[in-house]
Length: 140
Image (cartoon, rainbow, N blue to C red):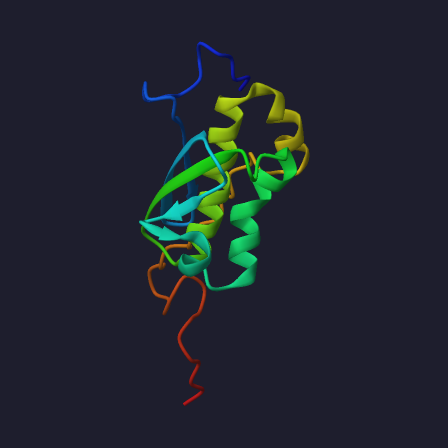
């Protein structure tokens, strides 16, 4: 999906919006020109994501496009766990950056930051104890 100036998702306040999903997590990301401040659910991102891998996921789109000190990021996260939310923020931020500046799309796509991770929890199946585990076999 090529982002053009007229197709960019914006809310009319010079903010660019992107939505990211991972497992059951949803992140609504808002990007605006600024100084590099990142807040997630009202907290700084390094206080929200305590695991280093999740912090790297959040920063990846900014580092790959070179915009880590030129935009402010505001995120609302819901659902799932911390790691799922980190993946959702990564996708939402990449989409918001792409709608803000279409020139960043090749760098984001090359680093697989615009690809939705479709893996979800498998449902429980009839006659089994979970998605795949069966009941214990008894010989007698």
